Image (cartoon, rainbow, N blue to C red; front, side):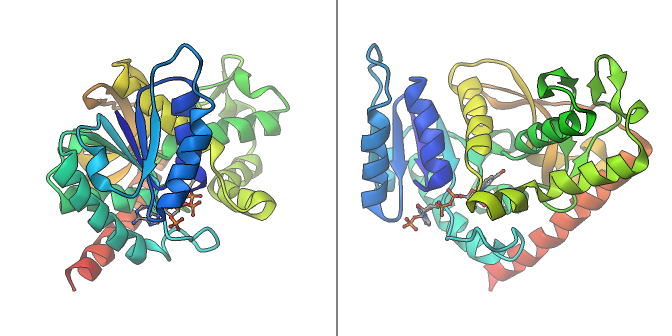
Amino acid sequence: MISIIGSGKVGSAVGFLCGSFSLDDAVMINRNEKKAIGEALDITNAIPVSSSISITGTSDYSKIKDSKVVVITASSRVHLQSRSEIMFDQAKMVQKIAANITKYAPDSKILMITNPVDVLTYVIQKEATFLPKSVIGVASSLDSSRFRYLLAQELGVNQSEIKDAIVLGEHDDTMVPIFSRAKYNGRHVTDLLDDAQISKITLDVRNYWKYLRDYKGHSAFGIAKSTFDIIKAIVKDETLNVPASVLLDGQYGLSDVCVGIPLTINKNGVAKINQIEITQNEKESLSKSSDTVKSNITKVLKFLKN
Ligand SMILES: NC(=O)c1ccc[n+]([C@@H]2O[C@H](COP(=O)([O-])OP(=O)(O)OC[C@H]3O[C@@H](n4cnc5c(N)ncnc54)[C@H](OP(=O)(O)O)[C@@H]3O)[C@@H](O)[C@H]2O)c1
């Protein structure tokens, strides 16, 4: 079973993909129960005729019992603020959600979507005794998809022709698009772009969410698809290589922090943290990005203690 905490724009989009692709039974949990029930009733109509899965909505956390995957999308109406401004309220909320997951689904794999995602991926592990490989913050695969699109736009090609576009680090202003690995038509994009174009794409990928906010107020479909891919890998025991946020223990020279790093995911959650070649400059940017997340983690942990 898949549990989705938060039945807002992201939670319902994740639920819709799980239902319409008949992945597994799902329960939608929301603070305001009516919303969860309504979304579940709506998504139910998208379940294929041959499928026997069910989607239900509730505010009762006991219904997440024995979930294989718990997806956290709950959030306190924060779209217009920056991700770090809202971290204290979100951390308090996640603390309570962690207690419920510990009580009802302690063996589940947990996918953190709520922002600031890297800080909260860390917080939920400290608040409960989840194994590091069971907790994954989903965002870098979305950022990578945005990076691929922006590279394609700048080069005037189709995004399907861009390979190995990956973004690592924080899902915020310090994220690190890895230009050194991205290729178009077998050629490194660094041979095709000048410094000004690289700076522009870096800024645009970091600010992509702001463009979406200005056009439609929020983002939902990209992250829902990134999340669905990871849920599917866990539920169907497929092997998926994606960047996502996990607790690091020395990889890339980073420890005791969660940031986006290349992972292999399967039914066990994180099967492997993959070490890929990146340039010295990219390593330094990743280290700075990790320092920013660490500093926010320290502030949040202090706040939660008081
Ligand atoms: N990781 C990424 O790349 C990425 C991408 C996009 C968005 N996000 C993040 O995803 C989160 C959700 O975004 P959204 O657009 O779906 O927000 P939204 O539409 O405001 O939905 C949030 C939902 O969470 C519910 N909620 C609040 N507190 C809860 C609690 N304690 N337990 C259960 N449900 C609770 C709210 O219920 P009520 O109806 O009662 O208020 C609301 O339905 C945000 O933090 C956003 O920044 C992350």
